[in-house]
Amino acid sequence: MKKILSIMTAAMLGTAVSAQETYDNAQLATKDLNGTARYVGMGGAMEALGADLSTIGTNPAGIGMFRRSMVAGSFGFNSQQDAKSFGNANKTNMSFDQAGFVYSMRSGRHSMLNFGFNYTKSKNFDQILTAAGRLNNASQNKLSAMKNANGVYTLQDKNNGLVSNSGAYSQADYLYSNVLFNHYKKPAENESADPTNAQLNKNGVIVYDNTGLPVYYNATGYDFGRSTTGYIGQYDFNVSGNSNDRFYWGFTVGIYDVHYNSSSLYSESLVDGGKAIGDVAMNDERKITGTGFDVKAGLIFRPAEESPFRIGLYVHTPTWYDLTTRNYTVLNNNTDKAYGSTERGKSSESYDFKFYTPWRFGVSLGHTVGNYLALGATYEYADYTTNDIRVNDGGEVDYWGYYYETSSRDEAMKQNIKNSLKGVHTVKVGMEFKPEKNFAVRLGYNYQSAMYNKNGFKDGSLESYGTYYASTTDYTNWKDTHRFTAGVGYNYGKFSFDLAYQYSQTNGDFYPFMSYVDNSEPKFDNVCDAVKVSNKRNQLLFTVGYKF
Image 1: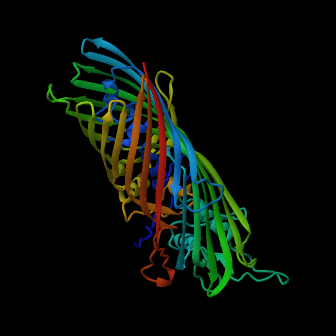
Image 2: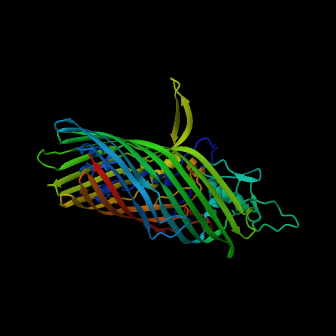
Image 3: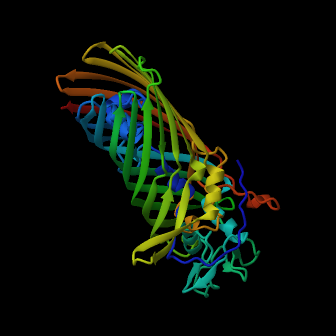
């Protein structure tokens, strides 16, 4: 879809405060289907069945259904299917996915009081994403030029470098302005003439000296690759119990540990008119680290005393993250030496910000038939338009002398979140069948609707700290996620051994940058079409448990 750059008034931005961008943060807000092999094998549909360590992080009341203490650990392998090689990234990686315990004690004749802890790798960032496409009279550098020409940001010459006070002047804009567009003095007699005769005019726009038109170079095509690694570790602490084996309750406090690493390379083949002049390549390294916490509460009840049918309800608060992001970005100018002011430019930033995820609400059903069949189903909803990116305003000391940080909402980026994201529906169904007492077979299906609006885009024209510190322009509107699971389990005395397989697939539309349409002059249009991409993953998970 074609998007129109919004022209916003420039404002002075300092570097003491900061925030992040819609697409960069959205990947931190979701969770994978992961945990014990039994939980994964049943598609995660155990929020009403309970009695599995992984329910500590979904419906905490599930821990209240334990009648014996237990300890368990899980590890496995994750493999990305059909991924192309990029850098030193591996398509298959080993993963430590879960470890936890429940201590169960009787509080009455038909009541229990349980305490639990569980670690889960709630998000695995290991992924390779590659894309390539043709560009017809468009380029990444042209986007920067059109932002400048339309007053989204204006430039100043400071210490032989081009800077701007606008919040819409991204790190990518800074690199193109100073490496490829930088204005020149008239050449001396023994110097080669600059083919652009680029000058900074009185309006702060880089233009051709002879025509007054903005300086940019179209591209014939692009290549893109990114590898991401890292994880979000989720540490859940639970207290739960049951009353008369009919009503089960639970509370969980979760602590999160974020480790995200990204390495990307974007290159374009540039032309000056019809003449090929070489290429430019943007190499970006980014890390996001930090911690967060949330609170989860849930209950499970059996409406009829004589029936094993049960209903589960649960709610999760937002996860409140305090994060730090760092980047190191290099633009290599591989064009003919007459073009641009330098062969290489770099930019790096490090800053702190806050990010709050949405509330989550879930309802689940569970039923057992004898001791040989268990059926589960769960529905969950989270509205990702409520994601909140916070600007750190500094700190204050209260009346009692305690220091605390204050923050405010990035209103411009908040509007982009509402336009680009949407509510997500998650449906889980699963079953476990025991052909004999100690052996179980499991099947499951897990569906998650798209978080991204198909018309959403990474808006580089916003007057926002998220734009100011952005070092890349690409984005992907990922669609629905389908997960198919299967597993087996065997009990031997007090030990349990479980194996699960999961296949997941998410398709998406990749864009190297947002599109711009000039309603008055079509030659200034900068439109890129979507490229179809997919993320197909295979997981093999093994859990060993011990009851005591």
